[in-house]
Image (cartoon, rainbow, N blue to C red; front, side, top):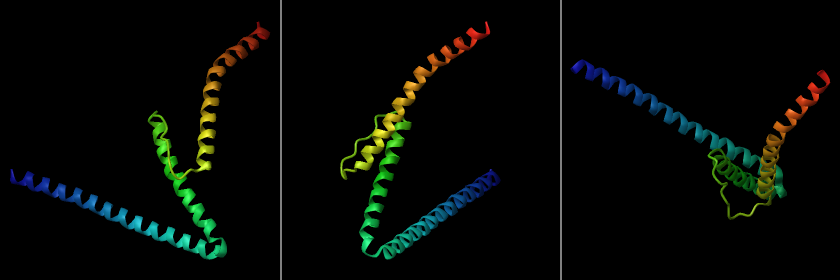
Length: 130
């Protein structure tokens, strides 16, 4: 019927309007964030003076580490093999992967040994009670 069709069209327009406003807000927030970041970086470079190159290299390192960490954690959550990264070679990344892997190995070992240790503690405690 025409009234149901008109109501449906009205609801679709409202939904589209909400999505459109949300998208525009997202874009304006992104633009604002980009401006804030560029302002902060420019301020850092001005303050560093002759050490400005150190700041640029640190920003470069931070960006690559963040990008790698995002991909790495996504693979870990999906229980896939961690991705291998080519250039740039970052010793900081290798150190992080080594640390992460060591923590996982220690956690798994503690999980295995923990069950046996808990049983042993219970038996020792009950030995004095009985």
